[in-house]
Image (cartoon, rainbow, N blue to C red; front, top):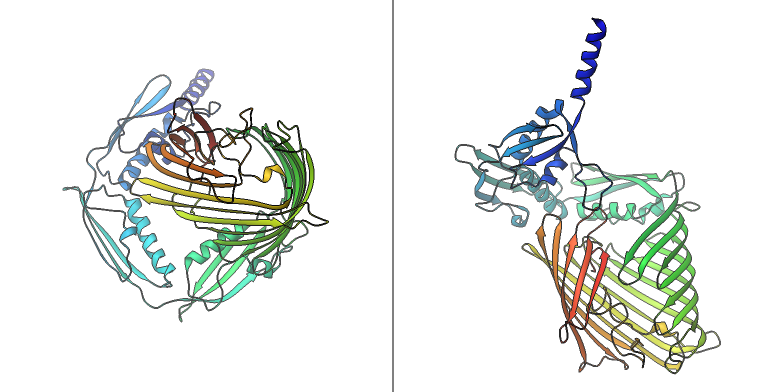
Length: 565
């Protein structure tokens, strides 16, 4: 009898421990992916064929349904009903969302304009999550305007019988605040002066949480730091004392390896090692190799932070690259000094030592076989306000570079090269408009420079109706030879299609020339479309570009990760 009872209880335990596939039915306003996320379950992306589908134990079904009801309520659906249907292998949650709470009125009293941080309009669905976030955003507006003690009274009256919400915001800004005493606690291998040079506020300056956020981003920009905490203490005299506590990375040596592909360079393999706090004070020393179908690189680099947000360093390496019309190998060394004037602005001064050999040439008249040594001072200015690098939604950037040399015993050419690149990303309702322009000019007054210094157009970062470096003048074998000047413009409209899938419409224009300015009588005009699929590492992108004058003959397809700008 005892053996039978034991077998029965064991069977019951196994029965209730069985896991069922979890499915949703009837949900319209909230996606299944969002509901899985609420339950801390991961619905695999289409490419994650190796990941199991989300499952649930039957004993947890009641708690699961209650959690989803609470979540629906936070999204404005106060009358949602959820039941379940169980079969042999799966449990399907049957969701009746019913009528949501609708915003009936929104009022606010504020000395500052907070309208853009109130995410509600009359007639929209009320969301408790959005309401809570709006209060944080409004406080942040005042904090960034130097009012650390602003008082916010925000209320949401919910009428569950009429399904209406009435919202009211009132803000008292109080007195302006200023940064007070700043205490920076050094670590074993990082001095306080170095840490101080990475923050963007000083004692006596008007208080701003934006400066604190930028300081966090600056600190975490160094891999030698694993954690940094900026504590604020508001005093009665509206002074905000700051203390910064930083923890070093316990494993400063990092090994890196990667495998990828793009339409420009083909299959890519990457391998590297980096010490992220070499001899302390966030100095970094690394070595890496990157091999693609058209370019092979091996290099080592060193970077050393100084006080006042200055940096010095060097990069030394070897490259071998196929330009179709010729091949080029080089040994190079780049010594630089960099100043981060603000979070957005960077200046860089460097000297490039470049020993380049041109070989395997299709036309030696256009590209003479040569072995050159050029020493080029270079100045670079960069201003970038984009909110993200791989997937920006707003902001703009400007980058300018000028380099040159004088023919002498240590340099084989007198030349100068200038390149200016800028872009603007603007959100308009549910769309994102992106505009970009590039200008480049190259002039040689004496001697010879490596052929790769010329401008080569075409590809995913250029004119997308053409393959990589396949646009512009060609030799008698129809291979690209490059140009001395270039102007390129791009216009994009990005929009949502469905869930994580987005689309883009674009137009690219290119002008090239063999003088200091391009020939505007002969332009290359293209248009096309693309798709973006959001992933944790950035959007996977594919673009198809077509030459406007001959779209059926001249077109190209490009794939990459991340937006192009």
